[in-house]
Length: 390
Image (cartoon, rainbow, N blue to C red; front, side, top):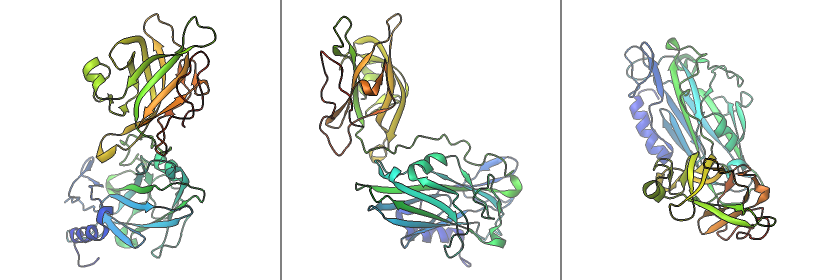
């Protein structure tokens, strides 16, 4: 790297790495308080971060975020990614020692692959040979969920370090990491997967290593790692009709997940309810496709989402909820729930319900089959059907 400026290194790396190299300002320094600086140049003390990576002969570099496309993996496939975390010298002077962290992003895949792909991260030497036990290991889904707010890195290569060590790359060289991955032999499917990480550095002389780190403000999200499902189009709620012998399972109401209800019916707002999208909260439960109020509210307590198409907002693919009566109206007893997605409908019965609510999240149909779920259409004159598409 000698003889090249950092800008020249990044420009060259972006050409080599293609879509895998994402540039972002993820180096941190301080004059009085901790601040984030674009340009990554401080006259009070230079701090530059350069993260390089290599996977299957492809290389790339950035000053923070790393995105790697693993492509379509076959069952039993193994591989690894090598990372180099460096504080390189530049024309502006010698770089300052820094504390470094990394954090994870939700994997860019839907379906079972994220739970079938095992990953582990270790410190290695310059040749890629292991020099430590794993910093983490587990399914891609679990790891991505766990380290969204940061993992400290330690130049002494202690995998159990709870605070970062001070990296002096000018004297000791860069820090090397190796991420291994393996797809289960019994995995069935054809899904691509992308890995996302962000690295950050804080000048040692301006920070306390016991502080929470630069990612403390990140709000963790629940990465969706279930089957590849359609986005939810609507939710139909069926209840036991009062006065009927046994349970006559009849339609109570229907919540459409589209853009019309906030505008036409005043149910939710465009930010909380829209096409294939709803956020946890309380919503008036309409009778059907119109705005007539059933006298009940549907309270969404949890959702599972997947990335929206073409960079749109996340789509809800599963949700948990309960139904409450307005005012003095007693809560109903649910006997069946129907969730539309794509061209199909998934039906859930008593085994998936508890009184006036669901037992956990219930999903829209999976994308590998657009027909009705095995629960079948709504039942009348008896208990609802159980065992929908899950």
